[in-house]
Length: 411
Figure 1 (cartoon, helix red, strand yellow):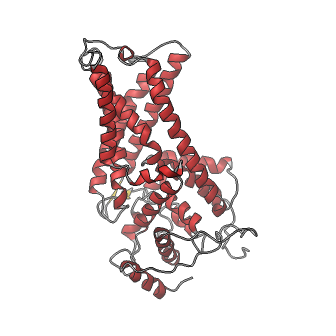
Figure 2 (cartoon, rainbow, N blue to C red):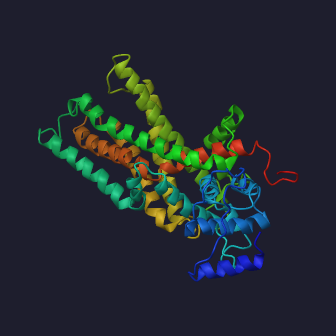
């Protein structure tokens, strides 16, 4: 392991923008080398910076109980590309380690694990995107693009409705009279299915790369249950002590975890409402619109309210976040996703409240434009972090059940 003096020299060189040589192990420390393995992939500058910082953290281990990253880190002596990708996506960017670290800037070691991990996470979304050529969209999928896409799609629909003279129609409640059901299915189903396919193929490649670096053992029911619990409770947004994350300063707050819960479960409830409405339409012959107390509305209304409140809270927290937390280059992508979720939720609620008024057609076009923009950007935006993080949590739950490869007596 490198000496602290050498690490200090590397940190100072990186701060001056000078290249630093990083020794990369031929294979993960957590898996035996394969006889036919070729040379290990070279680390990018961002990956090398994560590896450098984790070497320092591995010597210190003050933050070992904060989250899943540090126990996983202690199973490794070196950090090849797959290990760095795995740990970066395991990080929840809660900020606890940054505010607790004695080697954080302005110290010469310049340890900032949340920021270094966030930079690599953005790189993994690009690297594992499908089709590969569309990975560059992660770098351009910002707030302006998201809102412009939603506005452009809504304007297109508005012009289509206006051409029929029904933009400000007489009071009514049947939006299928404005856009027929088969037309909406034909527009939205291909975009949604493509998003699911692109995300699925991307995370499958990620899984194949990080599985050998995380023991290579298959999933087991206990590991799956533990990872599911961590996902559903957002366990690692508690700061490691149950008091919450750091946001703009050293104070702990549960606000980020609660806003994520509202957003996460609000989105799931809205998705469930759409699924139940599909069953109503095709299996029961009950077409929309639905009203309370129907099951689609019992799911969709609380879901929309939760999604709107959660995204509004996340937007506020994002604006106030400490500048050393996260990757500044990804802020436009983060805010674009938050804005689309908020616009989808609020326009959906407004559409429900506007039934029977002349504003129905106008709000329907706005809502459909927001939903289409959300679907179109799902595979190449912030939504990917939930998919990749879930995969990393599953691999962590598997790996922790295996003997440590660097424990006393290990081969």
